Length: 104
Image 1: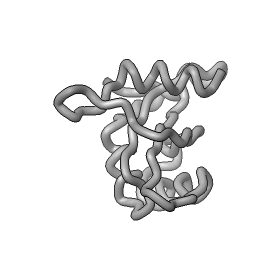
Image 2: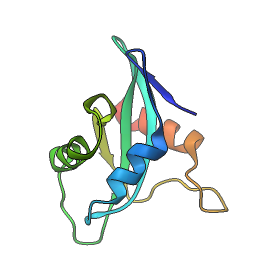
Image 3: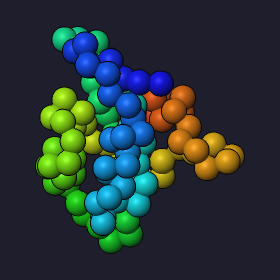
């Protein structure tokens, strides 16, 4: 599964791995959410480590420093827990639904 944003393909796993390299991120999931102009936008669901108050902008700067600008999440949504399947993989269906719900 990839996110098509403005004609560019973004693989969620790549952005997730960069987010997880930040010491204040415990878990992350990246999904595409609807966007009028680009079709989809890159949206991250992030579970902070206990006691962390890392900001959306700090995480966007972190991602921007490591991968292409078009892959940087347009939205970072902080969640108590990232949806996972029974075998601990990111549950992209539940993550997409949660992101849409939080953005509405």
